[in-house]
Length: 167
Image (cartoon, rainbow, N blue to C red; front, side, top):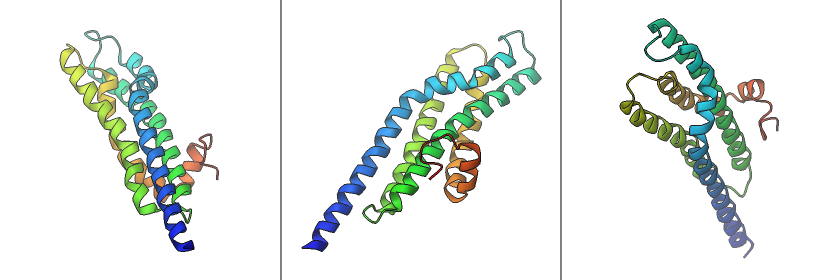
């Protein structure tokens, strides 16, 4: 009887953890567009006005945008990874079930943002530094998820202000 209750408890806690990650991913899916536009704005300003900029300035602005976007998006990755580590460490949560959901909660919003930006870029006459920077941000997110998962000291060094990171 006690073992049955423990299994039910494990199932419910795992379901709640998955639900939390799905909700985080859904919220991030909407907020990513706004927040990454703000984070990439300095690079867009450095890149200059369309039609009056040179290639070097545009590339430099795109790199600046990618750095800003990546730092902010990796902060979200650090939060999700840290929270998932804490949840997976519990006896009543199945870690092998929640880690794929953590990856999707991190990667789907940035991938969706890139798709939307590329569709919008087709309608514009000139390239956008922020849109071009998203390619690097997607790569940073993909690599960052695994790096921050397996090297938690990087998380504490760069994003100590994120909840659950200092635990």
